[in-house]
Length: 272
Image 1 (cartoon, rainbow, N blue to C red):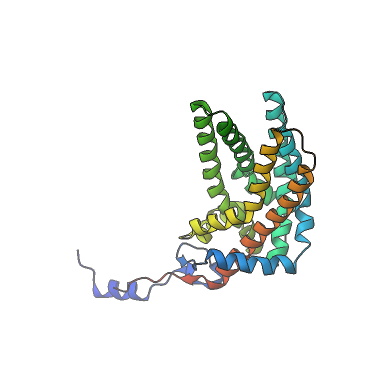
Image 2 (image 1 turned 30 degrees about the vertical axis):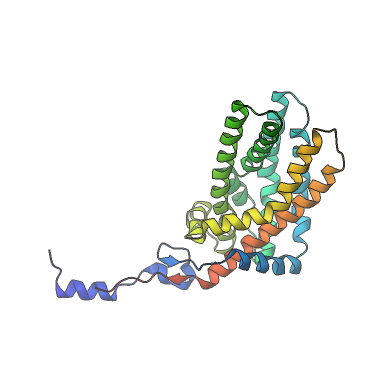
């Protein structure tokens, strides 16, 4: 049924409340396209200007290095599950708040409650990602040494689950900024943070892969060397590499958040 002239005029003059600048991240905004190279180069400038970020992430790096050492040791399955559970808990109650401190410093925003980042990390099951990737890497190395369909299937399932959770945690990384900077409640911050990934989740995933590539190499090297004997010097090496990669990734997300918040534009809509 055709609309009346009055209704047509009303549609022409209608605007969305989300078009307001202070409400970026709403449902009617367009995220800017940020290239991988731009994020990588911009993040280094942020990281160098705030070196205390490495201090904020050092405890998380220690926890990761110790867990990796335990995971690669010849322990019973129940002991490995216990170490994984301890790693998960420490990542939530210790590492998540410290990571939030690191990101707040890099983005130059004021911190608030530490419970928000802890719950966000728990909601996205953030600590499961490194657990699954380590398990997948171990299975992949064993597969190369002793090929079997069981190892192939196990490695494939574990790595696919890790990849899916990693994509979900791209959103988690941005939620902390939304939670602190815009003083949003946790649920709103999590629901709005998808906007920063809109149309560029693949690019941000590439940024994440580049940022953690040194740590991936260090972990694979540790796994390979463990088969030749205990290599004690890999623990401090993994610790240092992890601290750098965690801090670099925080700088990348800080850059993405800052550029998106600054360059986001209202979504154009057709006039009838």
